[in-house]
Length: 275
Ligand SMILES: NC(=O)c1ccc[n+]([C@@H]2O[C@H](COP(=O)([O-])OP(=O)(O)OC[C@H]3O[C@@H](n4cnc5c(N)ncnc54)[C@H](OP(=O)(O)O)[C@@H]3O)[C@@H](O)[C@H]2O)c1
Image (cartoon, rainbow, N blue to C red; front, side):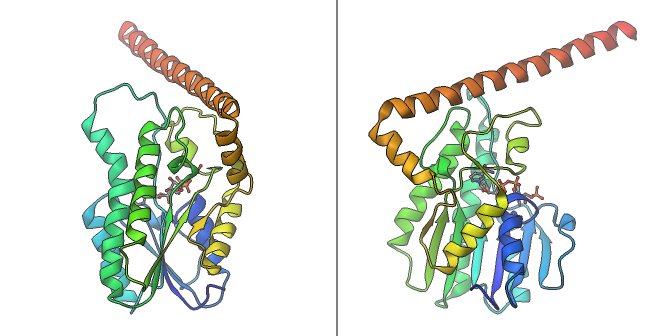
């Protein structure tokens, strides 16, 4: 059981982060610093949950979170580095800042958190938990930049495990599609069709906390994910079919985006005529 611990959960406002937090709150004596940009929306918990607003895609945001943690706790026992967001799109544009933004949140902030946490621990025991993604092992069309940020995290954790001192343990989580705000954020409000299979965030939260309890280094919340991965590697036509289905989803998404843009253009034309 994870009990009587000082914990940070980032991305705690919704989805997987909220489910992890709900599991931790249900166990005895945990104190949770719950971080996201809109922490005022984290309500209905008792005094053991401390909401904190910060933008974790910036150094100032991560520094502020550690400063708050050090004001509240002597030591952070477990750090769930979970905040993140996707883009879902056909990657056919030139936009340095857009590329930078997704890496700042999903990769740079998470790597910088490792350094900060290591120094915070100063030789004391702690566990850092990264929410990576199944997409950090198998990229899909529509998620080129997102998958790149998660593959980067997969590489980082692999190398750093063999460098990191004994006192800091690392666990990584690889969820498949999960019913959260992820699929609203990724499509910018335009309907996305999630890759199969799809899980409930509560299942992911339970699997994560159980995995941490068992000191697992890698946590796969979806039981069919690993067998499917083996099947796809062993039988390439199965993988081809799966990818083809995802290409179809992207194609339909791009059509919806174009239809929306066309609709907006028509609205503007109409407004000009009616002026
Ligand atoms: N859902 C999936 O299918 C899926 C699958 C695999 C992995 N994941 C990963 O799981 C993690 C959680 O995603 P989710 O699915 O639970 O999505 P979600 O419901 O959209 O949750 C994302 C959380 O991150 C916070 N956040 C976003 N940008 C932030 C920023 N700049 N600074 C601080 N907090 C920020 C959001 O709160 P605010 O908006 O208030 O900041 C929210 O609490 C992500 O790392 C995601 O890549 C998701």
